[in-house]
Amino acid sequence: MNHRSTVLDRVTLTSLVWGDIDDHDRPLAVLLHGFPDTAHTWRHLAPALVEAGWRVVAPFTRGYAPSSIPTDGSYHVPALMDDVLGLHREYGGDDRALLVGHDWGAITANGIAASDANPFGHVVSLAVPPFSVMNPRRDDLGRWFRVLPRQAGLSWYTVFNQLPRLPERSFDRLVDHLWRRWSPGFDATEDLMHLAAAVPDEARKSAVLGYYRAQPRVRSLPDRYRAHARDWVGGPKVPILYLQGADDGCLDARWAGMVGDRLPEGSRVAVVEGAGHFLQVERPDVVNARILDYLAERQEAAR
Image (cartoon, rainbow, N blue to C red; front, side):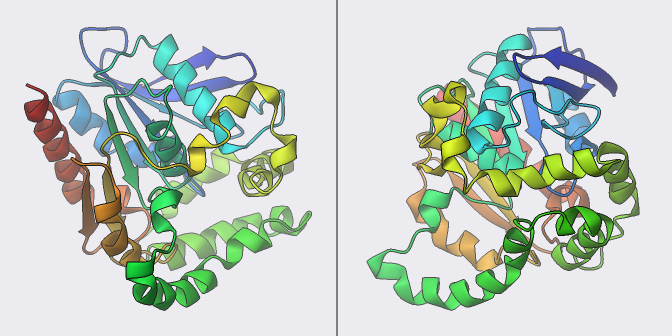
């Protein structure tokens, strides 16, 4: 594992990289973390991908040190999508490339899967399915209404994070609480240590909380990113693999049973037993195997 920095127009992204990152004969894999975690949550998946022939880039997304705070101050999902497209370009990706996202990274990956600008051949989402497939429909209203009350309770933090200053002041207690509730029984000491290094001061705390504060403020989206303004809540146009932990304390695992038949043909959905929200560090054996099997299946289907 090494570090590599990429200067984009409005942000410099520092990434953890695995494998021979400059060997363009190997397909590119871009791995996107979420909140409240860092690129280090890919420490299990990345080596497995390298062993399978990939080169891997896992950025600290905008606002998380050692990446920079963006000069345009945008933490909208279309801005995150633009960053990923920039990484694909700068690292010489092609249509063999893989995009894996977790949490906010999953939201970003889902948006790219819905975009005509998508250059990735494979997309994997962990813990958050495309928002379009979570909408109610007439033939499934009963299940939808059974999930909604619990989900509303689980999502309290999205409202809390809209408050001024209080989330920054209580940030350390908040993220410790979320890890314990979202992934019950998992020892998050290492990941919280990495998070503390990536969010060391109030400016960084405001930056990562900005992901929650930006989305309702559509009018503040910079013009540069408006081409992706509808994509991030749109339906995927390519097959995806969606994985969710059975014990997820952030997003009710019952969503996984409601989205599969609403994804493009060739998509796969699986619930990982014995895992919560951060399934890639809780059950890396299962998550890695699911992703590698899906890639092999997709590659075989393309032949």
